[in-house]
Image (cartoon, rainbow, N blue to C red; front, top):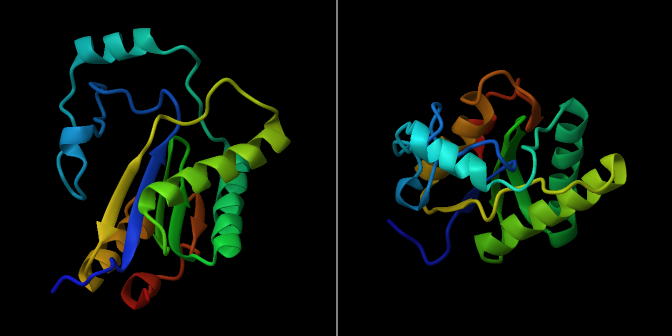
Length: 176
């Protein structure tokens, strides 16, 4: 049963130059932006064309930067009174499951803005850190929410900068 307001949002944003359309490992575009959907098929010609359009070097989050981004996400959630359910900051992308009383695009914007501000304080300004926009999926049902939490927490490979802690396996089952 759908309700008037979503249970939460599943937000993903990527580092600049890290997920080029047509790359061998796949990417997400407007036509492949559904949770669990297939990725864009590898296409070396498309990947090369995308790479040629890049104006800056790709940006990768090292261990220190990942912790800074996670802290920035926690900070904006506390400041805005949003409920952070799960977050996983990887080397090339960030996944967040959050409850908020504003549209997901505003949440995404604030996550990127706070993260950029904190990274600038730590590393100094760089040319470009994030790709344009990101993925903002609505989680309408409890099962959708639990699936997103499980994906973010346990299906991203080796744990990196995470909330909740990777050993809190019950988080996926007991998400609010």
